[in-house]
Image 1: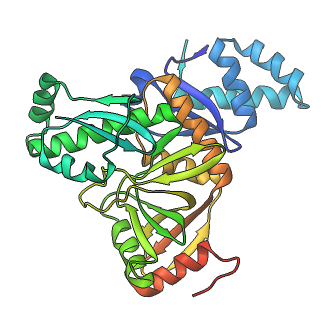
Image 2: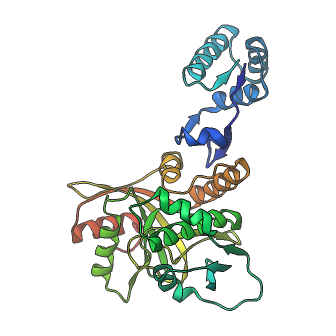
Image 3: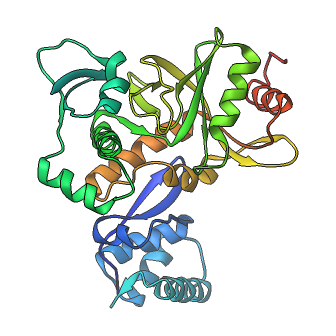
Length: 88
Length: 239
């Protein structure tokens, strides 16, 4: 899985925001705000990763149970897919 | 003809043909050896733009597109445009930002009436330039001020950014930077190129972290001015 081309994640005044750049900015002019974990996973997905890789990194970074982490990742990926932000 | 302008402390060579932009630029004419930016709409692009916007006169096409060219260039000089009406009182600029037709000019006009034109001045009625220099955040007037000719060739520190909405009752609240991010991105030129977008977002990081931000609901009255002025300057002065 990988975040589609044409999105930029940046921290602005303490918020993690994603804005479209390049071709994508023609169709979508909104702003997406991510929480800390959302931004962490986004950065992993920018480079491309499978679910196992995200899970390993998340367990290494955050004090969270495997079960909770897995559920959070599933929900998050579902949302990203729903918003058509992921290319397989 | 080529005019030399100094706008927001940027030296510009600009090729102008029509009265409107020439007239609006008069107060910005300057002398310099080396220009930082050169603005010229090539003849063939001009014809294309005119064809795309048949409802605009040629002089409006020139006015709008030379303005866009300037504000795009501004992003490379640590500055950006905020679609807003800017009023200067006691040497601070207060920018009232909203979609067209909401009443931002009406509100700043009320400020000028209330404080008098000696104390309150419109620095730019539609598209002031914000620029960061030596860790300070300034507002500049520019020749491009929307439908009105209200703009002044001056620079003052930015006092506050206020997002204005219409409301029956007047009220003002401080808002957090995270609320202001989408509002500000709706009211500026969003660059498509990634490197320029990074510049813009890094400027917004500075502005939103250092400048007081408000949401104002207002009607058209003297009370609206009192509520917004007192809300912004709560520590100290009251009217």
